[in-house]
Amino acid sequence: MRRILEYGGQGGIRTHGELAPTAVFKTAALNHSATCPVCRRIDDCTAGASLRPVTMNARQGECRLSLGHSQAVGAVQQSGTMLFSIRLPAVILALAIAVSAPSTLAQSSEEAGFQAYLQVLAAKARSEGVSQGTLARVLPGLTFNSRVIQLDRAQPGGGPSAVPPPVAPYLRTHVDLARINRGRAMYAQIGNLASRIQQRYGVPASLMLAIWGHETNYGSYTGDFDLPRSLATLAYEGRRRELFAKEFVAVLKMVDRGVPRERLKGSWAGAFGNPQFLPSVYLRTAVDGDGDGDSDIWHSQADTLASIANYFRDAGWRPGEPWGTRASVPAGFNWAGADRKLNAPTCAAVHARHSAWKTIGEWRRLGVTPQGDIRDDTLASLFQPDGAGTPAYLLTGNYRVILQYNCSNYYALSVGLLADEIAR
Image: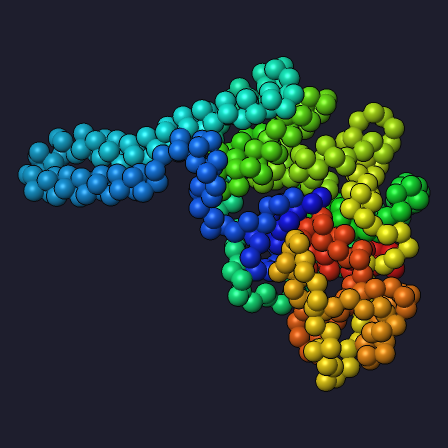
């Protein structure tokens, strides 16, 4: 599910440096720095960002009221005992009102701005063909969700010079025995179904299961945030307005297509279902795998696996080619002869850590030995993320397809290795 991000399933959002994924979130251009200003583009400032209250003013208001609180307490302390006992309840009530007033006013202003921006989103949806009936079913009752903004702003960012953390600890927690065993058990349970889908789409069943296992632990957690509310809130907040406004309209189109309103639950960032698709990805790649006329990636195993496979086929998966393999790199290997020569149009920080492309035969002649079954004419890049003496990998074009699902070496490696363990 196309996430240009360094975050994994439901979370992690950044583009500048390659950091480990941090939540269970979904793909599609959510790789933006958490420090982007509210108005990154002119249209951000003219399409609703100006409706938001000025945060600094709200904070200054709180400071002034804090001072008033201090003065009031001092006045009470200077009073006599009898006066204090008589007036204390009234003073406490006044203080409570004074302290709560700024936050209440700010919340009211935020909600008013959000409701106004909903009308902007409604107009955009109408212009793209969303029915009035769907707007009437979804928009009433939507409110601003401050928790979504808190979670979004808590996502770590990384600058161009940020040093990526080691890969090994991430792999230990995401290619763990429990996830492997559950994947194998699932494979044994639905092997015939998975094999049919594999034959139809050319994508290994173990890879479909690895995506499912990585994203939601095979459906154990898919998120309980209301999708329209989360997406509208993120669009209104403004830092990635174009992205989330598009996804909000897409979720309305899902309702137009017949997806029940009650199914629209997912992560705080708008991903949902077993594979954690974003709405635009659902519209593009979700398929009916069991023939009941419903692309139900929330409950149907067949629809979930077929939709994942359809995504990978459309992203360019090459049947019969592995994603990559572990490799042995000789001591003193000359990395200068394997410098990267690729100008990556997307995921630059991710691809910057890979070597130049060479055939497996060429890598063998340089002393790099693949540990898995892979043809000598297969093109691959060499990746040793944690430095000399640590595990290394030869990565094929199919690894790049996994990166289309989530642009993170941590994510793609863990998915590939989990798929290998499930199939073992």
